[in-house]
Length: 107
Image (cartoon, rainbow, N blue to C red; front, top):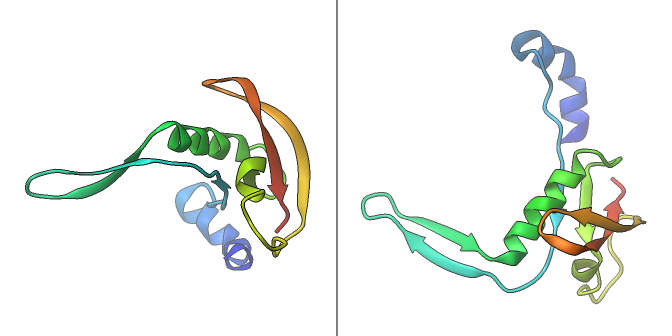
């Protein structure tokens, strides 16, 4: 996806004034799942885990590679990740007084 976006960057900038960038985050934990709506139904996910994942996504905007994961999420895997990881230490995030351990995923 990144290679295609890079190849089309000029076209995006010409047509829209900006080119899209890919970023993301990964966190782990329990969530509250519900269904809302009468006519148009939607599945919703709520909870502290979702808030933390959203804050990690905000941090990913300013990190090389654009992909972050909490150390707690990475530690849940039983095999080595398919990409190299960079320890980014404890980062302050809104809503967490002690911060959170973060790793960057090299892509």
